[in-house]
Image (cartoon, rainbow, N blue to C red; front, side):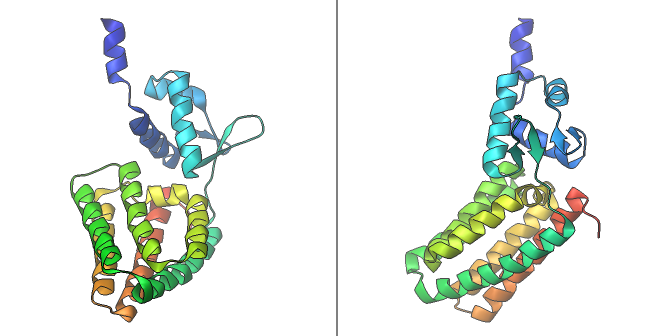
Length: 222
């Protein structure tokens, strides 16, 4: 009976992944840039195989990377690196919006609006950062599919890996998730009415606000 109760109280894989991210951001399970598996086990009560699965998921998402000795090192960008990534994101996302307006079909425009609505629903429901991150990716996938630029897709995917922890950090607070929902809806609305200037301004605003929120959450120095 006690064993079953202990298993019931353990987090699911996705929940454990989110908890580890929160602990990383709070500096509670990181020693010299590497995760302490012992501390994670103590805090979570999860067995090693479940912890390893959660870390595999975080590795796939780009939050951590495995070193040669199989340690898990956290990928936290510097303020300068984040600023550089932001500058590139603005250019790429503005290009994606321009191409979307030129090439997207009616179905692809509808898919973008649906993705924005879906993110809003999850944000209102208080979904966790992993779920919100997938919904955000759905929005960008819809944008990039409509834009038809495979090189742009690849470049933005690479940037997402580089700042995965920062992106996730920016989704930890409910108020920020709701604000992001509004930003994505603004992009979709501008695209829907064919307003290029407003759409470009909206994606630039989204990048700025996301970066500011994430930098605060992760504690990057000004």
